[in-house]
Picture 1 (tube, rainbow, N blue to C red):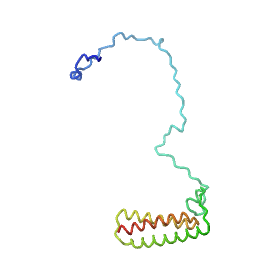
Picture 2: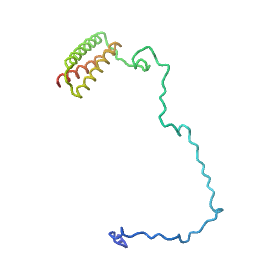
Picture 3: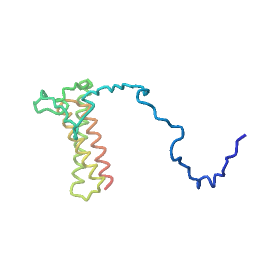
Picture 4: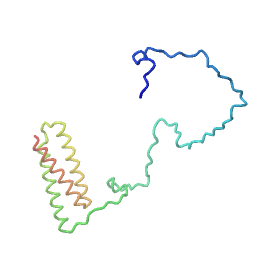
Length: 163
């Protein structure tokens, strides 16, 4: 069973606590009886304590390839390119060229027209895919070029259909 409170809750809010004038039974302890606690604070590594108001600049690799290649070539990261047979390569080349031509025709059809913000964004995406597809074709990565040019073609057809 629960015990009922001494005062009702409705009036408990109105009651203010009584603060004693001085603590009863509080005695001063002589200093010689206070234990001497030696607290050792470990030194933090200097790299954790920063006084910079701005973040440090990123380190730049100065031995980067300056042959004028693409960013992927300059980074030195190896790329995995699928090995296509001669027949697959010819087919991918043909599909890439066909998709590039269709996408460019659709972009030409949209040129000079009043475009919405979404359509302007779509045009920039199409141009990006076309640029990347041409770069992949120059690098003889026909599988990637075909994929990128197909994306540009599909988006350009969507652009033409939306007008």
